Structure formats: C-alpha cells, structure tokens
Image (cartoon, rainbow, N blue to C red):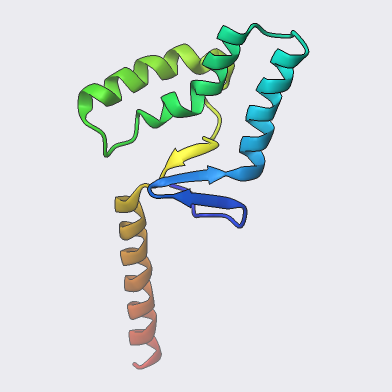
Length: 113
C-alpha cells in the first residue's frame, strides 16, 4: 500500500487521504445539492472507496469475491482510481521494511569490506 503522506490520517488500519477525500465526498455532496444526481446514486458513488476496500488481501476469500463483484459494478463511477479511504497493508509494510533493512545491511557490508 502507499506510504502515509503528510495529509493522511490513520484511524487504526484505515488511512484517509484528507484533501482527496474532501474533494471526492464534497463533490458528491455538491452534485446532490445542485440536483445533478439523485441521492440514491450519490450514496452508491460515495460508497465506492469502501466497496473497493472489500478486496483487501487480509479479508476472507468470500468477502474479497463480493468486493470484486462490487468493484466491477463501480468501474463506471471511478472504481479504478486510488482509494481515498483505504486499509493499511501491514504485511506489505513489514516486507518493505525487511527489504530496506537487507539493502542497508548489504551496503554496510560493502562499505566495511
């Protein structure tokens, strides 16, 4: 998963990209306020980032399957974009940290040789 940026807020395993979330959910709210979309459609559009989270690899296979189906339904409304609200992938972060530590150890070994 992406590294945490300056304007990201972490709530447990959930990372919220604050500026993009404000833009996304604010845009949906304005579209309803100006009558551009009906509220039921706006609820679906606003739920897309949460539907995409159902594909997270830490979730059970049946939940991920449902997430894949819902993401397919969400493709027309931006299901391919990066999530504005997403789950941290702790395993990937540990793997990334381990790989970085190994590179540092190799660099130290080369410096001391």
